[in-house]
Amino acid sequence: MKKRVYSSILIVLILAILFVLKITVPSFGAYFFDAFFGVLACIAAYEMSKLLSKTKLYNYQILAVIFPVIMLAVNLLCVFYAGAQDNIYWVLWAILIDIGLMLLTLVVTFLIGLCSRKKVLNEMATREVKNMSTTKFVFKKCLNTLIIFVYPSFFFLFFIFINHFNELSLTKLVNLSADISILVLFTAILIPMFVDTFAMLTGSLIGGKKLCPRISPGKTVSGTIGGILWSILLSSCVWLIFANITGFDFLWTSFPIWAYLIIVLIGSLIAVGGDLFESILKRRAKVKDSGRFIPGHGGLLDRIDSYIFIAPYILLAFWIFAL
Image (cartoon, rainbow, N blue to C red; front, side):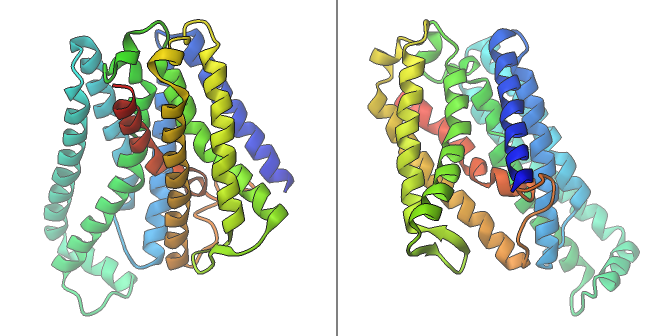
C-alpha cells in the first residue's frame, strides 16, 4: 500500500511540474508534455506486446515499441503546420499519415519476413508453432503488431493534439484571451483520475453487486456510479476555478458549465470502459497486471488504460461542444 501511495504522489508531482512548465514557459514548455506522452506510449506498447505474446498473438516487439516515436514526430509536424497555416485539416492529415505509415511499415515488414524464411522457421520452432506456413505466421505477426500500433499508441498520442489545442484552430475558444489547451489537457488527465480514485473509495465503503465479475472482480456497481458522480462534481469545481481565473472568464459566456459537464459525463463512462477493456486483455493473458513498471500499481498500461480512449474523445468533444 505504501508503494502505491508513494508512486501516486510521484505521478502527481511529475504532472504538476509539466503543467508548471507548460504555463510558465509558453514558448516551448508544452514540448515537455509531448516527450512525456511519447515515452509513455513506447512503454505501454512494450507491455501490450508482452500481453499479446502471452496469448500466443506473436508480434514484432521492437517495431511496436519504436513506432510511437514516428507517430509522435508526425503529429508534432502537423501541429506545426496547423498553427503556421491556421488550417485545422492538418489534424486530419496527421491521422491519415499515421494510418498510412502503419500500413506501409507492416507491408515492408511482411515482405522482409517472407525473404527471411530460415529465421522465421527457427522462431516457429522456438515458439512451438505447428501446422502453419511461414507466410501465414509472418502475416499474423504483422496483424498483431498493427493492433499495438492502434492500441495503445495511435489512440494515446491524440494527447499531442490536446496538448497543442490552441494551435489547431479547432474552435472559437482558441482566439480568446487564455490558452484553452491548459483546460482541455487538465480535463483529459483528471477525468480518469477522479473516476478511478473515487470508484475505489466508494466501492470499498459501500460494496454491493459486482459490475463485471468475470472481467474485473474488484469493480462494483456502487463504486462505478460513485466514481462517475464524484468525477462530475469535482469537474464542476475545476470549471468554476478556471472560470474565475483572469483570462478564462470567457468560459461563462462562450463555454457554459453544462456543456463541460456533458463532456465529463461521457468521458467518465469512456474511462470505465477503457479500464474494463484492458481487464479483458489481462484475463486473456492470465495475468493480474500488465507489468511492474509502477511500484504498487502494476504496469504502465494498467494506469493509462482509460486515457487511451479518453484522448481521441476529448479532442473530438471539445471540437464539437466549443465550435
